Length: 198
Length: 241
Image 1 (cartoon, each protein chain N blue to C red):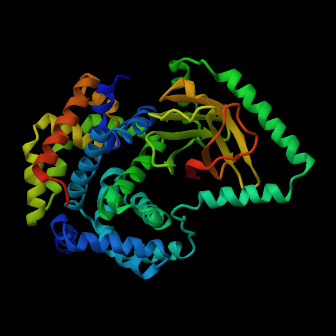
Image 2: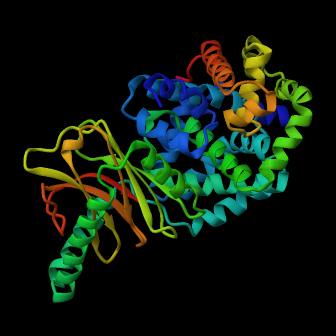
Image 3: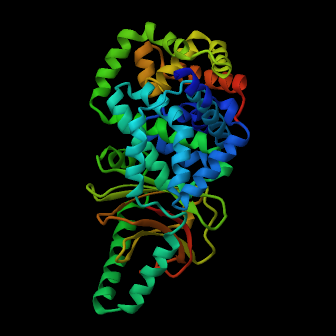
């Protein structure tokens, strides 16, 4: 069932009509339409929860953050500007930012750094392994595979580990400038592989 | 930070991998930088695809909790702030009393003190001010929405607890002759003049001001060069808090 739900959420499906549909649902939600918002929740919750869970890790806290994200989307729905990106990208951006706020606000962030330092080798294949094998997921996995190990490691530690690039530099014991370059080069390659979403 | 350095932060910014200070610096820059704007949008869209491929459905029960909270959560309006400003000014007109005049006079004094105290501060002092504000547990930061359609961006970071606000303006067009930008801290009760922003400082303005009130909005108007104790010009930048 996990695969089915995930497939429903895959970006390929939301590229065309469904993308607009999410934007329309969000606009209707912005006028106080709770039914449209419930539909929007169904469309976006797996993606939002996936990214939050990946960053926060603790399932109970991840649920709290996912709830915060949707309440935030509801609160801000009237300010959604479709010309600046899709509703799905907006939701992903809010979700990641909220998850990051949660992990950085904890004094646990030091513990997180230590834990990740211990697992940094094991860590960087985990994300690739977790990408399940629907067509779209295969595409993302292939794109991640196009990054050099060093690039992928830096991008994943930043995005899913929730670390700043300076923290990533400490974790990997390399210069900050080196990490900045790996992150930038990695993201450019990922963008070239996956393209935009429109 | 050089321009090139700032451009190279777009990927790290999209990954939320900047600390608060660098994030503030990058945000001040990127809205007026077309290259960075496109980069950030692209990178976010790319990351959305990666995230979508890792979707994990939350427990069924979460939906009910979300919808229950949504049912009792007020939504923000798309652009209510100018209305807040008008109501505020109308209220002032109705209740134009000696105490209001005194408050206005006090505001002018505050502006003068603020300008004297903070003009001519170095860039590094500004960076320290910003860092000090952002370190506060109650620190907030907002982008002011550009209502005039001209170039330039403003953001304000503040901490009520610390009683300070840092204004960051970038790529601003010069104010009309004999005019200056003026920053307002708007509360439901009044609009407080915070600082006159000298157009002679050119495109970039960094200003630290005392601000202990709880803002419902920040706004910038064009006022006579000497500053005005009450807002007379139209709002050109605004952020609802």
